[in-house]
Every structure is written in C-alpha cells, then in structure tokens.
Length: 172
Ligand code: FEO
Image (cartoon, rainbow, N blue to C red; front, side, top):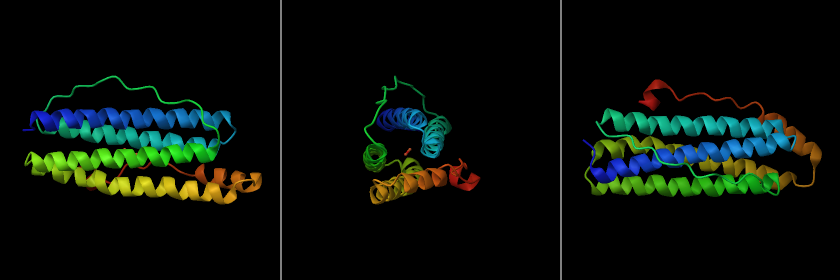
C-alpha cells in the first residue's frame, strides 16, 4: 500500500514526466522548422523516453494498489533563440527533474516506504545519464559555435539516435 502522500507525489511525477515529453516535442518541432532534423530526432527520442518514464511510474502505482490521478499538463515554450539556448533549457530542465526525483526519494524514506525508495533508484541513475547527455551536447554546441559545417555534422550524428526501451530487468 502506498501512503496518500507518496501516491500523490508519484502521480505528480507522472505529470512532470509527461510535461518533459511535451517540452521535448516542442523542441523537436522547433528544430524541424530550423532545418536541423538530427537535433529534432534526438528530441523526439527524448520525448519517447519521457513517456516511458511516465508509464513506469504509472505501472508502479497500479502494482502497489494505488490510484492514478492524472492532471493537466502545462504548455511548454515553443521557440528558442538558438540551438545552444535549447540545450541550456534541456539541461536546466533535467536538473530540475533530478531535484524532483530526489525529493520523492526523501519522501519515500520519510514514509518508511522501502519499495518506493528502491523503485526510485532507477530514476536516480537515469537522471545522471539525462544530465550528462544534455550537458555533452551543450558543450559540443558551444565548442562549434559559428561553424555551420560542424553544426551540420553534429546534426547528422544526433540523427542516429534511436529509442531503445531499457531491458526488462531494468524496467521492472
Ligand atoms: Fe524523465 Fe528526462 O527525465
């Protein structure tokens, strides 16, 4: 059984993950319109990952006999000044999500809910990767600023990303 507080907070995290998916879809569209299809692809995959995160929490709530209560998803921004700005916003967003996940861990601990605390460890690790990948692309973008050729090559590289759901044992 989940306590009311943990159930409410996990439902809130479903909303935060779906908002993340919305944000990355908005960024994907922004890149499509800016003729950077590789960056757009990277953002589309990012949005798929976020939906996966939301469903992972959704399934966990149900598995624990909890109630799913979905709430309205805030509208994301739709334009950014430059690719660097988009990746800055991505990194800042992931840092914010890391904070949310940490707060959830502290709440689960406070509520003596070991199962939720252990479940959340997957997200703790995932956030390390999320911040790292956004930070790497941001670093590369800053390095190549002013070089359309290098931007073209980075775009090609980001176009290779595909969504691979984590292995069954990691997704349990
Ligand atoms: Fe669901 Fe990007 O963290």
